[in-house]
Amino acid sequence: MKKMKLRKLIFALTTINIIITLISVFSNYIIRIFLSYKLNSEAARAGTIGIIGGADGPTAIFISSNPSPYIITVISALLSIAGIIYLVFSRRAGE
Image (cartoon, rainbow, N blue to C red; front, side, top):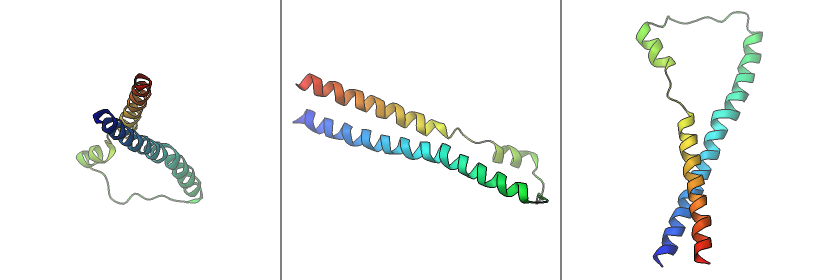
């Protein structure tokens, strides 16, 4: 009975991690490619692009430094793979 509850919990967490991985991949890659294409086509039509205000040193560093957005994708993917491996092997051991 306890093993069955553990399998259900791991199945639920694995499913959630797979969903998080898919959403993260979608937001990191596909949306960025679309926005890059869209903004490049609009920037090509613009005659002048003005910069409002200047960026001082600390602000420029704070704005330009960005933690890796791929870390969530990698962690979720690894947890999903580990959950799938556990579920496959625990099912075979139970048979």
